[in-house]
Image (cartoon, rainbow, N blue to C red):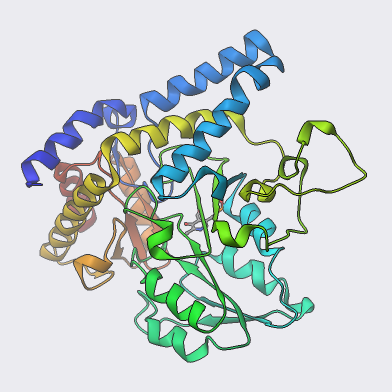
Length: 381
Ligand SMILES: Cc1ncc(COP(=O)(O)O)c(C=O)c1O
């Protein structure tokens, strides 16, 4: 699609995001901007709560949880039966990994570029005999397949890493990783928090076993809801030991004498979901689906390139993946005091973020090159 059309896309959807009336928002990888649809959905939830109290569960809220599971399934090319809701990635990880048998194969391979919660989860299992290999990144941007290939072996239970690395925005070759893991008899778990909503993600094509993501960032749904995908052929084999009443057959039979886990991925659900976020994320997922992840990818790619070019032209150093194909909408601009720089941006009306040594900017489809221009001018000034 030509750039002009992509520009129209931003113009069309930008009015849906009130933040742009008062600020330049470039921090989607921390928190997607609130849309008018999600705000209305939140009010709809409150109205239902106010009018019906607990009866809203049966007539509205349980159906809304089905809607988000289905929307998430469509987003990643899966069936709703392969999806489950969780309060956070950390919680989703806890239940799904509780089903992995580490007795025969004791090793987990992950990387230093992964979000710490992923790595902590396995480090905490050291006493139980789980050995966590944390691969280092030679260039500080990504970890090549060859580095995984050197350590993934017949002792490896799980290869667990990100689709997009949260600090550098580098896109990992997940298909290659899944192939490698499977060739050596291991499972492949992917943290897709930073990819779903900004990149086309198809769990079947990636051939991953477990995929985790959440509503907060590129899916524009706010805090409190994560999504789990477990490959159908694996679900029955994975018996979680971290369970809840939402994960059993006949949930409303309230029978504490027997535990009969559901046959689908909802066996990994953990208790009452955050219904306000079910509402806001249903609206967010609808918006992402309406715009289309293919279009979003093209728009975000062109904004990312523009941002990198502007930064380099202004004499700033960009830390990120080398090629267009492996670069996503997270741009790290090196800075000696990024926290102070982000504060100054904030005072000038630009909402950004930082990580050690760099200011982090992350445009979504609602951004424009004018946003980039403002941010880079302030950073360079
Ligand atoms: C890639 C990635 N994984 C996991 C998390 C944290 O997930 P949660 O707070 O839902 O456990 C984040 C950031 O918030 C992230 O960027």
